[in-house]
Length: 406
Image (tube, rainbow, N blue to C red; front, side):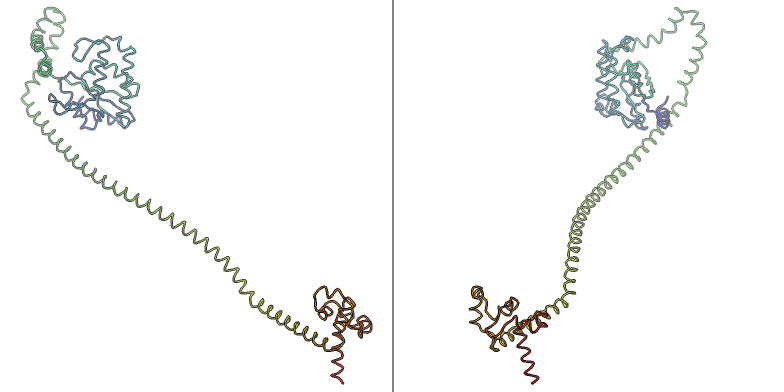
């Protein structure tokens, strides 16, 4: 399956709610890094912690450092290593060690691809422990897909010999094996060779024709042009993404400023609201005080008139009392010394004798002098007694009235 078809396949899988994982499987130095990068450019997610580029792969490995270390530990646990050509014992894939390594794989996947619909994992070591990965993906309900990268074994061996200083005898042995394979097969299995001979001839004709096809250069040129166009498209998208990122950053700054301003306005509004509440409280209190004062203002004229009338009445009463005192004093009917002599309690009270008689002495039946009997006068004048008037003052008023009439 091509990288493009793999991307479309998992785009469809994402639409129906499935998460997909592309496992790039291939020998070291077979082009797995290039295929992984192409899948990434087509939209598949990569792990978060990648191996840094090195002189033998300046464009990058596009594989996880953690997973590479985990794979080395897993191979070591079953007595192998990345360059071992022997098969992994099948019973190891059912062991506790395999389950523990699978648990570590699931934790890394959950951390790196929690929000991913489809992602790609690459490490040539996976070729040797595919069952471990299938078990881990099944636990997470992730759909696996393998992209197998194949390169001429001689070229792979030569590249490994250059990078890791391996012995190049394997290249010569492989080429010799290819040359001798047909003759050896025919010698050891003549009947099988007869049955397969026709199929091999047809396959040789088909693939030989493909390899010898003169149009392959044109196809390669078309693919290079398509890749170049795709590269330009990616460059354009990267530029647009940069612009969008800058716009988003600018919008975020504006949004942060607007939020800060909004918070400031909220604080100012809270202060003003508190001030308004205080003013409303004061206005309410002022209204209450105003109503109370207004009631006093409304009542003031009546109160003032009442006070004036009372003041005038009190003044008249005082003037009347003073006039009555003078009249009684000048009438000759009130004898101060006689009154004090016959009423010694009055002297002890400190009250003026004539005031005492006018206030309460007459009511108590006391006489103002030897020549005037209070009780006799009241008996002779029952109207005065009924009016509760002072008899001496009443007699004086009657005398004055008689004098005016005569």
